[in-house]
Amino acid sequence: MNKDLYITRLEMYGIRIYNNNEVIYEEKSNDIMSNESIKKVRIFYDSVVLNKLNNINNIKYKIYTKCRSENDNFMIWFNISLEDFKRKCNY
Image 1 (cartoon, rainbow, N blue to C red):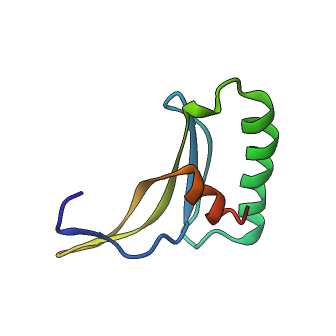
Image 2: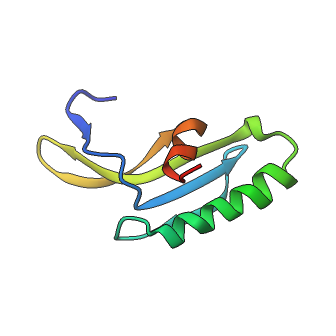
């Protein structure tokens, strides 16, 4: 990561779940994700990712979060691990 680019916090404004680089779930908002939105992500993960996909090792996760550089604040899709995904989604 560029030393001049900083993730301010890992607040979730959105989430993407990928299977073999194809987006299979996405939710994005201008506000921090609500508990209801996180619940929808968990339902999708439990019903589709765990029960219907053959190889969960191909699943990748990104969150939409705030970022800043020396000159600007902006939003960015940021890769997270399965462990971070579970923590963010209250598993």
